[in-house]
Image 1 (tube, rainbow over the protein chains, first blue to last red):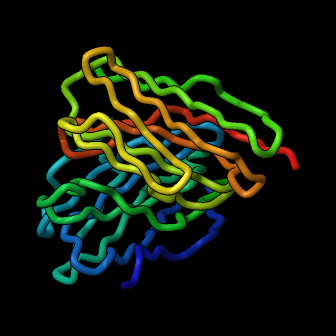
Image 2 (tube, rainbow over the protein chains, first blue to last red):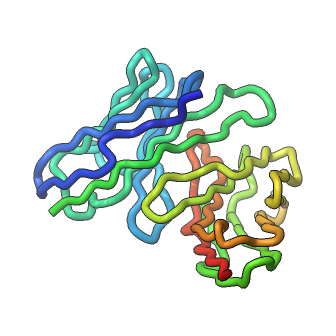
Length: 116
Length: 111
């Protein structure tokens, strides 16, 4: 069983640029969510996709946007990058909602974004 | 607004010691609670998931308990090993199916 994979693992951008991060969900998982983790903090929820539609969003501005594809993979796009966007971006996929482990999230290794 | 607090922020113990990590949350209306491990610069590894109807879950040397009414969970690690050194994160389910995380407890197990 293939786990959640993310790319790229590291990248450096300058303020004002745009970035796209990619995520392949775990086999059989139809829900993908994205989190931002600043240094020394817990992850913060950005948004969630189910069946190619956004169905939940945290307190992030519209310049954070996403897509989910028919194969359940996903992209996170951030426009007009700011210095504070420097963080580890984590993608998670969820088990189908059935059984005792329903709702368990499985995370990828993350994409480390540095904005200069 | 749900808030999750983890105490202590950091913990250093000698190898072989049993230890308890604490997590508290302000809103008891949760669907589940999940404990994760995070190694430096890495992603999150799921350790244990406790559904709201359950009181505890066990996996190997790990045992997690949940008391919804008091808004508390504990992660018990038995016979700690240097390989257990990592940051441990507690998260509760939010209203959108998302997770709300604490800031974590950084554990160091000394040989």
